[in-house]
Image 1: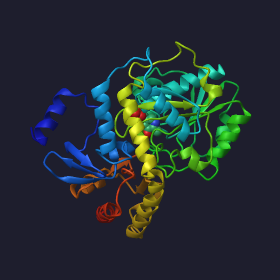
Image 2: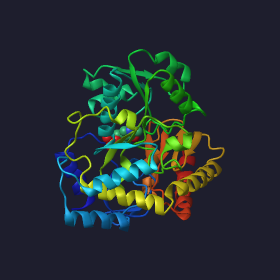
Image 3: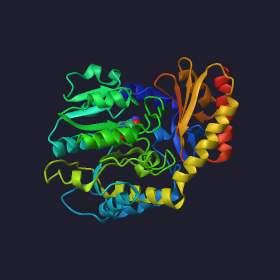
Length: 390
Ligand code: PMP
């Protein structure tokens, strides 16, 4: 089958929930992917920051292969070595003591919301406007962009939204029924929005004073993306709960709720569960991924390459009328332009660079953290060209 036939079959047999780019991916290596016609692309999107370690990393491929040959099983009625090894590793690299395994970001956030309600005995969850937390009913309600939830009413109760970055609005919103505040340390889908200096620390202080839990959704920012293993470390906060997924398994689906002992113990046997959560194959992929992140010092690399990328973009796009702002933390970069950016995505792809347009007007750049300087230079050339054409 060629690309055209595959795209036609997708239109016929698959529910049309995605706006897809018209290429059929075949394989990848590092920060490069190929389509089935053999065209190569510098992957500056990495499936929404899903890949940090580079495509087809041999260590992760081998770990998955070895595990698949030994045991693919999904039952939390038994113990597996892989699950405890991964949990131990996660508590060593994060500010948390205990783990619940999920399969996706939305599922991790569902678990976090349930844990916060069970621990506090309260119901209200405060989230930010313009946030994104997932597509399940509770997480789409937590999500602060109505377009995602409006068609699916009635929605679960107990969610409130305040402007992101406004500590005064957050203080006004916290009340007797507030169980938790959930925030992305940097808003991803919302357009790479970086909070004002000190905001997360102020929210943490407010939460502590009011016996409210702080949940950080690090589904997009976690595992090195922002230049630290977790963005909480970069911003100097210690949330009660962190949710992770995306880059955790090097592209293999796995997520988790990470929490502090005090809070985590609110979950008792029977309270929560997931058939596939923490299955040994996913755990083996995640262990190998985290080992690669540490061995290759990829969070540090993200910081270095991120500032190089940002600097080059600012250089090339300097004086470009269509550009409103160029911002980033580590290898999470946004270029805000005047007007719609979908056309830029198409033009860049045709020139061999994969990017993404989010929030309608922000070009999002979230490549694998292994991206090389030459690849950044090549991507900047293409982006300079297509954005200057606007
Ligand atoms: N939280 C954040 C911050 C996200 O960016 C996303 C996905 N874009 C999710 C949650 C949902 O993750 P998943 O698609 O794995 O459910």
